[in-house]
Length: 392
Image (cartoon, rainbow, N blue to C red; front, side, top):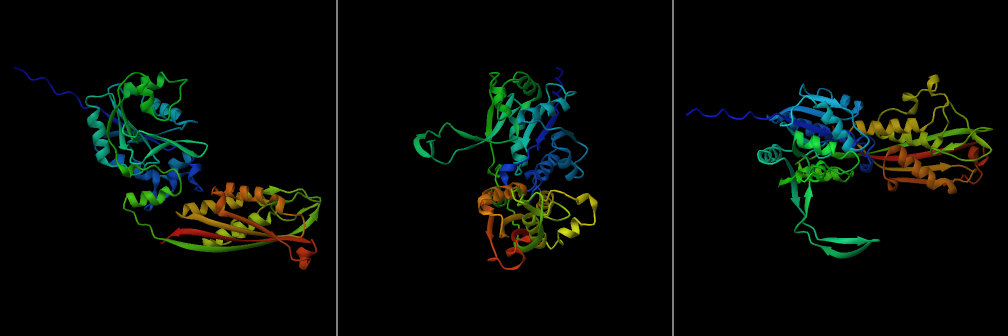
């Protein structure tokens, strides 16, 4: 009796979603580029898929600057453009796999979950031997209640609930049909789209290390779960700037235009507040001053908006794997009154640096009519920036 030849092993592709901006995390750069244990968050997932012998193709869905930041990503990976929403990003990745047959397998993973291990991948692929779709889940350990207008309501039975993680695993043809049928329907993950086709989705054991990076505080949680110990040090920098007041010129302070008869004279828009903060951050980094990076002799900075300088300083912090802990600004002016504009200035600084509002302090004072500020000849500002930087 002739034995039947073994069935061919299906090819396996990994779709790695890294197209989000991660603004909720409060970082100065996309969260997938933040350093975790000395390497970018995105690199953790790339390395996990690279190391798994079953993965023969990878689709990295990310903006071009993110892909470039990763350097060499291996011959098995090809880039795809992110969409405005997660669902479109996955659709773009599926298009990149158009030459693969429907019997292939695909894992869809969020780069914001860097704690991916081979054991989870193995469990998902094993489930696909008999199923069309599988997801990793964890039980819900906490008591759950309904919440209405900030008030706790009835307890929700958690026995039938589970926390869903990624990667999620599918037969490629199944995922293609699910996305084709969901052109007008949105979903927060791909398993929802598959279930809408009436196809069962198998749950396998997840992993607590697949904790999702959503807020800056999650970095510390991930470091603990992954056994990472990053030694951080506190660095403090001080900045000071002053500009002359001149008639018939716009007045910009703290990134906000303030109505006034006079504006500040300078090579750029002469925003003393943003200049002082920029110098404070660069000082904490021991990275020179604003004039080193944006020399007044360079005509490209003539009339430039100073938020560009502050954004640059914030990006330098992120490039070093650091975080902005706090910014304290004092504006010294006899006129105009700064008080009415403080909330807007504070919000604008937080926006430029992509940090929570409670990390920004803005104060104003006068010199009791003494000196050049007291004579309304100019406005000064001083700032202190506190950073957390990794030890070398």
